[in-house]
Amino acid sequence: MDPLTVITTSLRGLVSAKNLANGLLERLKKNDIPRDEARMTMIEVLDSIQAAQGALIDAKHAVVAMQERVKELTDAHELLARRREHDSVYWLADQNDKEDGPYCPTCWDLTGKAVRPVYRSANDDGTLLLRCGANHANITFRVAQQMCGFYSKPRVADAAHRPKSWRVE
Image (cartoon, rainbow, N blue to C red):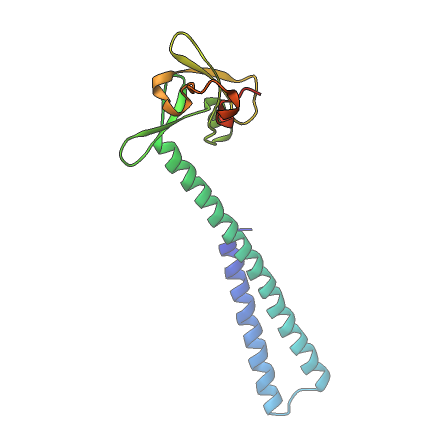
């Protein structure tokens, strides 16, 4: 049920409980109510309050869940607004219009997540062969080497000195 409807219904239940309690109080002041009837009316008031409290707690959880979902969608929209596509991969533009990347196009298209690829090898044609960084080993793509400086083939001959992202596993 819609949280707003739950809140409205709960407030009506609380108004009803308040009216019952006020009627009970007036009759108690006049000594005009049998003890068993007063007890039953008080139980009815407490049940109404307890039901309203439970419904309001549920509504609060629903509102919090909606707020979290709105934040997720807002963040995803902001990220998508910064996304650029060229050279068969995605890039993210910052406030100064400088591009960061590349990011795996398959991961972004399937999950909406920006996943950096992993260096696989450098090619003689000036491109780098990159593979998906989310362990989708069969997803590879080529990007111009000058486009992604931090992926450039290291000059260190010893593979142990290379960053882990450059090691082929």
